[in-house]
Length: 156
Figure 1 (spheres, rainbow, N blue to C red):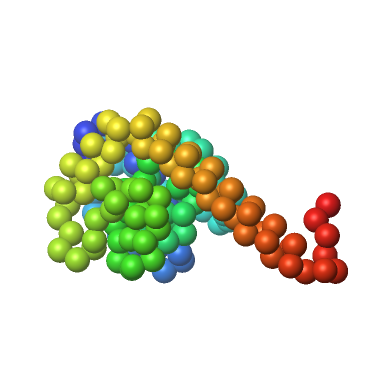
Figure 2 (figure 1 turned 30 degrees about the vertical axis):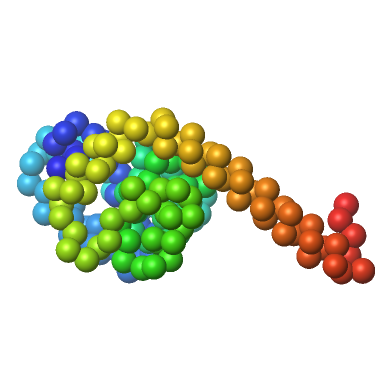
């Protein structure tokens, strides 16, 4: 487990339905030393999520918004995908190697991939920064095309 390997772990939910699961997970941890490295972050807003993301080295996420926000913050992200949208986002960002399908998920595989991601986090962060820059450019060009096609709206 990551906490036993010396990592500090922050558990948080981006969907209220996940909050009880986090409580169950924290309650199930019996190793006192590992439990001391696990934080249960109760986040109430997007700003809270972004502040947490600014403090972490990497993220393991399964919800689409968790994946999107961590990538926006250029945090290396290991996605546990239960939905095609999560897989599609990771593929679009060139992060296919860091996406695992939830079907037949193996804890040892998650831990091994998280360790590898931790070791490669600087390179992955740089790649995410390039992807985010590209996406921002694409979005601005798209916005300019929309605004340019509307005669009553002028960009200031």
